[in-house]
Length: 188
Length: 292
Image (tube, rainbow over all chains, first blue to last red):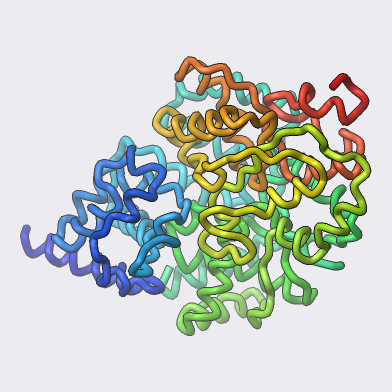
């Protein structure tokens, strides 16, 4: 068990250090500027500073299973403010990817579901189909929640702000080739 | 002035009024927008949460198509702006990324030399066209209109080059120059919650409430945005905020190009004013012959 956990931690380390500028993570001075700048740290089980700390202590699987990583709103305040130049938002993206790859995220968290549906609809149409996206999201996460969305949906519809059909881009074949080539190369 | 134009997915549906007003305002300023042929979604914050290199690859397709025209690529959505810039920067700086993406593009008979400059329309209008020309085209001064320009995140962070990531001022200067009163709005670069408002509205509602409070307390009658997601988050959730926090907000949010169009004397219909969820009538009607 220990060995597996250590191996997993090793895999995480390698992955994180291999993202562009990922090595900078080693220079974190635990000042907490990231946590203080984060608009959603009040929602997080672990703040951004704690994530780096937990990561160093080899506790990353616990962090991934918490709600933290998926609360990142990609506002990039931490990234532009970090005195060590750590691109923390990009690190959060890598943690999201690792969580999905190893199934390490809370099943109750709707955000990874949204990300997956977004990618699926984008792959299907070549563009993001907002109406399809929202419908699938509600069906998968909270089917009854769709009722709470009806008043807003109707208002948007009456203002002509909801699509009633979706077109697929002409170059979808090319797009799929690009995606498949990168996926196949195993460096997705 | 000629540019390649990347509208992005939101502008086809929920943010149609952004697209309409972008085209209308650019026409007044003789800015020619040539839409990138058959562009694909940039993937926003979602694609990169699942696949990193693929997300750069799909942006590379857009950049490769745009490169054929040899013009700067103009986006109006800050998410597209960030994603396209990020792909561009990583392809320029990281050889291994560039190599893989070049190979992938070649499979689709595309090629990207890395020459496209990705810009936001706000940058183009203020820095290429210039405030003097905008003033010269203004036929309806926005005198007495108190606005809170709201920038949100990705227009200036992390890849923005034309404004301050902490305290942007481009829209402030733009609208002061056409007569509007820009109120103090300390939260102007703070996040609205982004996609979290869609996935977890109960948790993230506070972010919207804080922004609305800040704008209202400082006397704003109107919030002006340059982002489709900020715009819809700020207006679509006001009812929910009012219910949850026992507040009474009714502040319209419109796109900066819509307000610019008002100053240019363009008809409401051309700017799609009236498609908001929180009506802007009481604030903007006086510029259309209504009561002050």
